[in-house]
Image 1 (cartoon, one colour):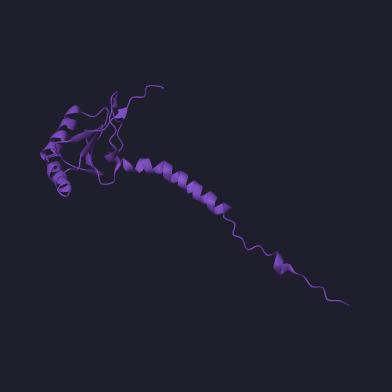
Image 2: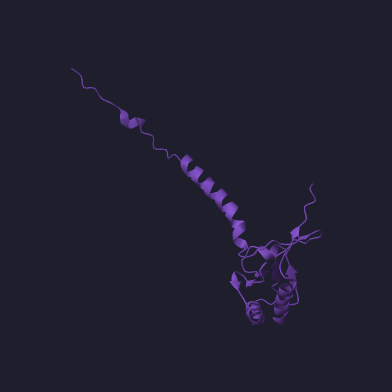
Length: 142
């Protein structure tokens, strides 16, 4: 009688299956691609539409100084509500490290004009001479 010998050790597959990991990574990549543009604008405003626009790429940077005026008249510096009288000194302290940095303003399409002008006056009180007003570009339908 002979002994039956099985060679199952030679059939073991030692390759790693990376397909599930790639699927998960692609789903995470898509989620981050959708959410990232929403994180830049901490205050949601409906920007006015302009025909002739200039691309301001520095406005999307993390360290840019962003002032927003909402529809109900609140003024934000970054994500924090700020009073107009304190705006000049706060912006001046943010710009003292880099005086060439530009200040950008996002005003809601239906914001009260007087509040927008108050915010501009507060920015000017900080000694800012170059202010970028952000708008949406009018879609030509092409």
